Amino acid sequence: MQNPRGLCAASLTTTAVLLAALVTGCGSSSAGADTAGGGTAGGDLTAQKLDWKNCPAPSAAEGGGAAPSPLPNGGKWQCATMKAPLNWSKPDDGTIGIALIRAKATGPGKRIGSLIFNFGGPGGSGVSVLPAIVQDYTKLATRYDLVSFDPRGVGRSAGVKCKSDAQLDQYFQQDATPDNAAERTAFLNNTKQFNAACEKSSGKILPHVRTTDAARDMDLMRQVLGDARMHYFGISYGTALGGVYAHLFPTHVGRVVFDAVVDPTQNPEQVSLGQAKGFQLALDDFAKDCVSKGAECPIGSSVQDVENRIAALLKKLDSNPIPGIFPRRLTQTAATNGIVQALYSKDLWAALTEGLRQAYAGNGQILMLLSDAMNGRNENGRYSNLAAANAAINCADQKQRYTPADVERALPTFRAASPLFGDFLAWGVLSCTNWAVPGAANHPDVSAPGSAPILVVGNTGDPATPYQGARRMADALGKGVGVELTWKGQGHGAYNSKNKCVQDTVNGYLLDGKLPAAGTVCA
Image 1 (cartoon, helix red, strand yellow):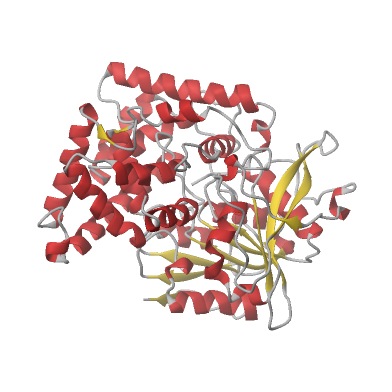
Image 2 (cartoon, one colour; image 1 turned 180 degrees about the horizontal axis):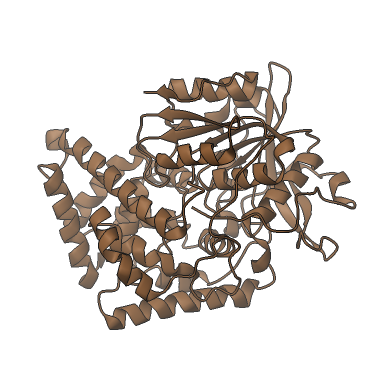
């Protein structure tokens, strides 16, 4: 959730970073195929040679931190920058750099090629995330070079800039669920000022960060890496990017997996409503799990009691914030954001339980830490450009521009879907109002006749990309292209759950080309 801009469909970035922070004691976009055609890059760019070097520490825009640790086999990560056209419609108008990272195939077995990852967002830095979770892909690393990248507008790839760290601290403290005319005016003004700051600082790149642009970058990447086909693992927003790639370049598709699947048939309001339902379901499941542990659940005696106490906390914080991470205080907005962040993964449920227990006692530190992770803020007070890139890519993709009247109309439906999260997600649809660049389409075109099969993995308990999106993606890709696999689980995504059935099925396709029967279910 890029609060108060509404939920983004990714949490691998923030969850990986957040889990590390907790251990030491402290993760939908729409895109439309444009009219520039699906041709490959021309000129010298397809023949460019990448200068692979040892990776530096991530930049502030990528989230900061130390240089990536050595690989499990003792090898080193390699980083390079690929040149791509700034404007794919006018490729002679100059280039930008696309930051790449790779871990070379370890063996045993014959190398298949490169496996390119996008972990979601939009706005997540693949250069930062892949080293953080590479242990989840050790089997795939035997026969693929594992590759990820910062998509255009993200991190080191002509990263979008909007506000300073201090300004973002203030921005994320605002009331994102206005209750009266004055609060609504303040909310709208803050959104307008954020969007104007993006235009002022990054106006040159804003028209060129659509998902179709990133898909063309990926096809150039495929060629520069020397692969005849695109082998790809897309997660969350990465499934929308992968679907657009398949639409533009169906004959270039190799072995491809989509996990935590974005519904390509919905507009932003429908996506947000689906997430309201999804996160309410996740909250219900969290509460059931907590109550089942008896005395180990100090936040309520029943599911309804847990949720009533959370609602009472949020109502109190609306007018009386409590101490968070000094000097900031935990507001209603930050607390809501933190709760949602924890519902992305069962691994964070224990942190949510403790965070709520502390908040009831007047200490908002853990909930604020959860919120900070969602917003891309590290412990040093520096923000990645996750929020800026998320806004820029979503608003360049999404044609819809909603008004306060649209929100007022939709509020009863959102509140029925989720008493706790409905208002928050309804007001979030205004994030692209007053954006400098028009949106491309109502929703992405992912039809891909002629493509190789794409394995589409849906999770029945996914809060951010609800399960029905997997079926709709499989259908939209086309007959014989989308092959659906279901996992009956919890959290955002399936492969990283460590479920053996899911991992064996995905690995079987990516490594051996063994496609499961459509409709296969993993429990």
